[in-house]
Image (cartoon, rainbow, N blue to C red; front, side):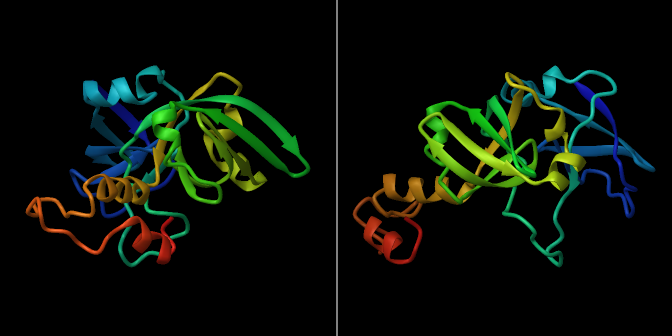
Amino acid sequence: MAFDLEAGFDLDEPMEGESIACSGVCLTAYNISGRRFSADVSPETLSRTKLGSFSVGDSINMERALKLSDRLGGHLVSGHVDCMARVRSIEPVGDYTIFTFTLPEVHSKYIIEKGSVTIDGISLTVNSCAPGTFSVSIIPHTLKITTLGALKAGHGVNIEVDVIGKYIENLLVAGGRLPGADQNEQTNITQGFLAEHGFL
């Protein structure tokens, strides 16, 4: 399936084949002209994200790929969506808005309090979490300039968990062995090592 998209900013120095995050999904841009571009979306992407529910005229969050020379205002986001979550509740608290989401427990283990999570391409800090659920506190500016302000209870969102947690889990499951290492060859990466250096 092909999407024809229009950014809310100029695509200066356009490069055919560059990556542009669309509601948190990394898409490859082609036919770039001014603020418009096309992107092909695979069946895999349609099945794992909310892109398949978009209609002509819908607003989405959009961001070009990070340049290594830029300031990093959030955490590293790859645009590879892990799962979808649903809005459980939206609660105004003073000037802030608390969003609570539900998601598959298999993915909630990667979400930790005060850690980072990506919701529809927005890098956010986790307020609180429990198996199958988490909440974030949204400032007025973020609510105004992103699609979060249009969400209602029951709406689906794209979720990308912090990739560092997945790498750490993979190393622990592998018994501290690096990919391709000999079965008997061990590294110094253990739960004790990770805890000592602030990863656990």
